[in-house]
Length: 327
Image 1 (spheres, rainbow, N blue to C red):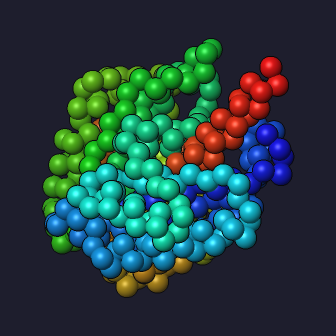
Image 2 (image 1 turned 90 degrees about the vertical axis):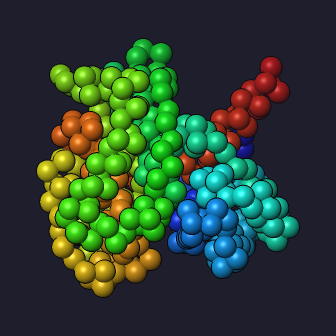
């Protein structure tokens, strides 16, 4: 695999369109360009079952910008993965055909299990290898993925995956008004806890959290935003957030602060912004349910996930291909 090879990984989610362009290095990669835009592809999906024309138009514009960046950086290999919104929409396959026609990118609608696996691959280097069990969760726009991981002398192995079809966009649309009151918020968290409970019953995760037998790692805009707010950052700084340890008490304090802010105040905060002002409380509710069901008391924040997993996967495939050719 030539060191000057350029790869592009694109993650088309329910709320965001994100891309990383990178060159391989040693055991990882160096990012040379990036893109992120809130497109709200899944807007109204829970109500209609379809991707709207407006949402598809916004997303096509974003993907066209990604394709331009790829050409400028001379990306030789790319992969575009589409997640919950395209999985769920009755016109998801029709939309991916439009993407290919307009941008030349070939979208791959991946399963929830593959999405969880890519998220784990992208952030697994943040897990403490001396802790035998890990609960990794990814709060997305349209779904929340839970991954139960065993670490031993042979490395990491996935013991369980569950995708719950509730994310920050779907929850904000369905229950935003209800969460405006404390009683309503508590009712939403209780329902979410019930939705996550089968994963606990299947794997007995809470019992493993006694005696330093398990750790928690969260990868999503929700946990990175809460991390930035906890640190009091005036401007988001990935270097300070990726790998940050957060106590549940600090998460609860920031969540209470957000609940007490008006939508305008949240929109004005540079670490939230107008595009996520109505979503961050929904994210807090999902995270609250995770923390109540698995009360470890602390978690680690990952500002990495699916895109990094896609990049590493492509690079490893090419490296193995090169090795096979040499032998």
